[in-house]
Image 1 (cartoon, chains in turn cyan, purple):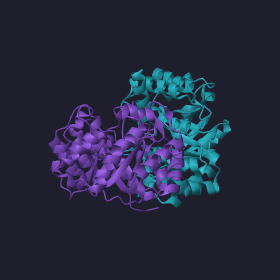
Image 2 (tube, one colour):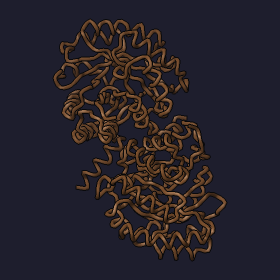
Image 3 (spheres, rainbow over the protein chains, first blue to last red):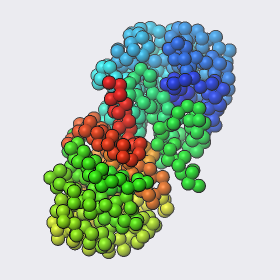
Image 4 (cartoon, each protein chain N blue to C red):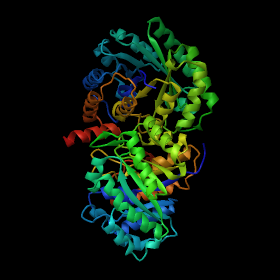
Length: 303
Length: 303
């Protein structure tokens, strides 16, 4: 089962947006450089979301201007027309290889999270995708609450699949299927991804799991079994979603890379160097929940 | 795949032996009662280990005298002849349904952990098993470091299987196969258990996983797939092994029960009542690493 796995680091966007205060942009950049040095080759750096909605990411333009495109494959999330305009105004926009757009399988979650219906989210995304394609950029779609919604509970499988189809029809090159509140267990994950694979190739499907209840790696394992080879994670496990009660953490990149390493999969990421990036961001934010981070840091103190 | 799963709670023994100080025996007993009320039907309460080796469990006799056999299926670990004598001297020994004996697949780990060779551990266990059988008690064997040893590294599969066979030949009714330092990934877990199942029925094999690197539930999932239906865990995730550097925690019973619940498996355990037992022991010991405990406790504070 040994093969190449693409790890999409979402910490600088999905992780930092959930911090209680804003991290200085120089620290964000220093962290991103450490992540790139560790071998992270796919990195979502920020979101051009309204500064009042998520003040933690209000420095999106400044951050983009700092980036060196040779370091990694960089992505930014663009939620709406205003965000697109802000991105297009960046002098260094060529440093960004990929634009990400967002929707959810749950109507209520979309309303609470981005204050529009699912249909409206597609209307907004249509222009963003067209602009991205015009610039020659790759497009990533996020399908949030694909399994469970904090407001609606269990999401119907057919509903998730129909939104997934619409994201590909929209022009997405890849869709990240998200267990936003961490309630999916590996069997249901397997069912949804198996259905998705009947229509779309594995290279276009990513698994985005939250470790709220400790099941993220089990879901990754279930996906690997099916041939899925793209997974989202956040260094140290920081982050979550401010609008999803209980969503207390993304799958930690260390935990993901460690398991993949042990399974003989190739990620191109050096775990020890990754831990250095975690130590850095922990010093700027919060205690990091990653099990591997805690275990390896403890081991170092044994020496 | 829905079926009955036996959860063996090892917190009072495997969890408490790793605490920096001794918990008062009345607190241990109150905790055990809470665990039984939550539906824990298989519970290892203590070890008759030498008080100087593990002072945290020096109250083994006092604890056994307090137990009411109608509450659960109770087990005690007996490491040697002196421990057996101490157990046999307990007036309330009938409250104990099962005797557990211990060995490891790694020679070095056995030497460091119980200061004898694998062969010597079997010599010691022979008399203990005979005494247990004479008393009509069930016998559980622990096969530690079945995958990895903190001193020897990767353990040869054939070596683990040969020790497993010897434990059954010794008279064990059930053997708990342990990933003592949490390094096994689900594929290798699957390989070992699949081999074991060629020789022994699923009802005699338990999975004992440590969540040091976050892979315990992935290993449980791999085992479930094979038909394994017995898993060890520790409420809150407390414990580990004082002689295994980095072994920072048993799989948390909450995390296990939560995933099994969501998979439609039957455990007979009430998760909310289990959390009450966790809240209690946390107040007496340490911050508990269980993800489910943290998430559900947070949710309660939302209300």
